[in-house]
Length: 214
Length: 214
DNA sequence: TAAAAACTAGACTATTTGGTCAGGTTTATT
DNA sequence: AATAAACCTGACCAAATAGTCTAGTTTTTA
Image (cartoon, rainbow over the protein chains, first blue to last red):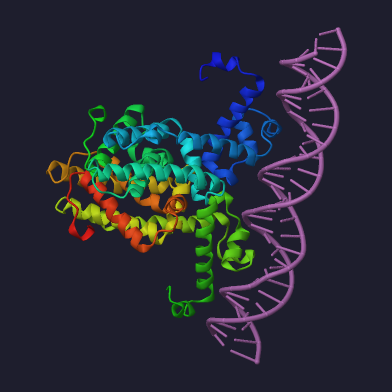
């Protein structure tokens, strides 16, 4: 869909919805839900404001539609990992997947961060259902790896919090990171940061880094 | 100043300024600069709105006063570390200090995060001066530790980013963390998370955890 | 080809918001 | 005790904002 030839094959409505969603993601990422202006979203989408409200019932509907898309990003191959898998492989790929999302969808990550910091008013259902059961399942797998001696003793909750913290940081705090580095991070820089992070976390857990990530 | 006896000895103006700053920190942490309402800050401070504007020239002045306070929090004993110091000791204490700020001043951490995610419009000077020179100095010390074989080869920038990411995560994403844990983190939980983080990062760097943090 | 549906867009409304104003009260100073 | 300074506060203003309305144009469907 990123090729302009593909764009031509969408209906006018689909094309405009995508333009609005892309524009809104940037505005909500930069200003938050309350700070974002419908007019600014319209300007960035290069559409009249009333068009935005024609396609999305309200500013809030637009925000919630985006948030729902973003929550789907967090699905990963770690979701299906079992006790029989190699924890070093699974965790390394999970970190790499998360870093790739931070590289490709930094505004999505920022929107998620803002939603959490703002008290997560729109995530109650997600938290209580999907997120809690996902967490329970992953914690259980990690515990079994520890029990089987495949992984050094660690608290599975803190391990996951630390993986999220570091991988999402590259998106959320990119302004600070780029300022301190003196330049934006390239794809190659992200790859290096990914390998560095995998090494830190796996070594910190007593695991050996898979050669693919060295 | 936390003792009520001390409060009695402040002038009316100082007492009100503190009330406003405390209220504002919570409102800006929850809603961001644009999303926070002067009336809501006044309500939380239990003062009329025009009193807030009597003590602070504008909403923006109030925000900048708070931000300046917050930037001072990041000063730490790591600031003065030298090549002659033990990296395990220095890094362990730095992580512990950062976690303690996350525990005691979560709203300050959230305000800082929001400011960065919002593009850091008010941090240009801070970034270009203090932050850059602090970073250059710390990176130099870390590089010398590596050169002397005191620390495993690692990228000093990524190491610091990862320390900030994880320690600040406990404040910024506390809503998610508390939801997944099913309860808020106690001081003892924070101590455990701190030790866990110190172990992860120091082991990940080939360092031995000081016994104080085991 | 005509009608229905989708799309467009400027004008407008009601509400919210940051900040000002004017006059009052209380506290501090002389 | 009188005056100055600090503090207080409801009413008000101008600007900004989300969303509605209405009538037009374009595209799709029958």
